[in-house]
Structure formats: C-alpha cells, structure tokens
Image: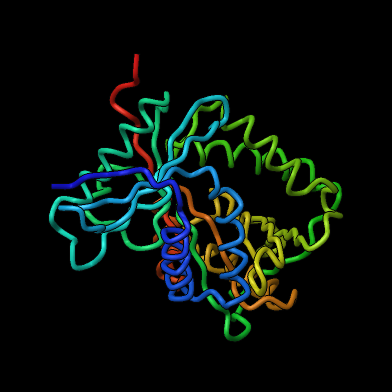
Length: 304
C-alpha cells in the first residue's frame, strides 16, 4: 500500500534530486558550468518546497515535492519532483503520488498545478497540457546562410515598433498555451521586457537583428548571449506571416546561430510555447533537443 509522509529533513532527497537533474541536463548536452548554473537556479527556491517520502510497506520507493506560488495574481501549485525508483515503478505509486500532490495544492487554493519535466512524459501526465518546451542545439560550425537572406543590426528607429510587436506576440503565445489569461499575460509581458532589456538596443550582451530578402524586411531576431555559460538564449526569431512557407524560418535560425558563434557561445537555446506545433516541428527537424518541458492542468475543484 502506498503511503506518503512529509519529511522534516530534505537533505537526502535534495542530493538525490540534484543528482538526477544533473544527469538529465548533461544528457541534454549542457556543459558542466551551464548545468551548475541551472542547479543554482533550482536551489534558490527549493527551501520552500514540501517533500514527502513515498513508501510501500514501510520501504521508501520514491519522493514527491510540491510548492505553492503566486502565479500572477492567482494561486498555482507545482509538482517540483515526482520520482519512483526504477525497481518499484509501475505498481501504482506514481498515480498515488500525483493524486496526493494535486490534493495538497487544491487544499491551499490552487486553481492549477504544473510540473517541469526533464525527461519525456509518460502516461502519468498525458492529461497535463504542454505549456512550453526549452530546446537547445550545439553549434559545431558556422551555418550556411540561405541564399538571398541577410541579417543586419536593428536601428533605433525600428526598435519601438519591434518592441510593441514582440510584447503582443509574447502575450499571444502565453494565452495560446493556456498558461495565463490575457490580462495576466499582459502584466507578465510588461514586467519581463522591462527586466530583460531595460536599456533597449543598448542593453549589454543582446543582439537585435533585422532579416531582409531582396531588399525587403522579412523578420527580426533577438538573442541574449551568455544566458548560461556558453549558451545564447533566443528570445525571438520571427518571420512575418506573409513571408512564411519559403524556408525563411531556417534562415532566421541560421542568423541566430551565427550571432551565437560571433558572441563566443557554442549553443543556442529557445523556448517554444505549447500550441505552436509549427515551431516545435521546425526545431525538431533542425536538431534542437528538449531540455525541459512544462505542463499543467486545471484542478477540477477548489476547497471550500
């Protein structure tokens, strides 16, 4: 029979959790320094997590960790970890732990519960919708640019229109993924852009590109270098709708990869939002592997 008991001392679990994360990030292609940075980010908030030991007939078979967060004016729960030892898997412990975690979150007023997976999802989380994926690819050599497509630095005159368009697109992606309402997404967009590029085009370690073909603007790009050691983060590589279907998406990625190498990084990372199957397929075909996947589900009921 599966039992769950909240731990007073999380030391053993945390060591095991970090070991598993380290192995997963390394397998995804991150270097040692980048893995350590990822682990540092995890450690920052881990002190607030509530961890339960999963047992069967008094024997520990795994762990589950949960936490509550203020998710942009609404309470949300998160399953920080749910792990069953391999030789105890498939005996119903996973379902019992998930049910316990969802109930724990619901009892504290959560309307939604999410999880961040570092391994492919199994049937346990089939009912959780994909909200986003973090993808990455190592760049071993300069990419070949698509004939006729050029990339140049964005001008100050072009920046205001680009910023307004990016913020609107960001809101649309968040809402489409089902992660937040329109109003919540707009507030998040304002906060995120203000924090990420406080100096606009002059913000250090950022590259802003305009993509052109035959003298006409076809898209834009925005990249943050040194996001992790050796890793550039692509906040946006965008092709205008009227120019899609011509291979320009690959051209935008090539421009981003070249900018990555020129900045001294060796890997390019993106987030693709849930619901954007076109982008997911493009990244898959271009060799961008999933590092993390975020999923969530609305809770069926809230406590009285």
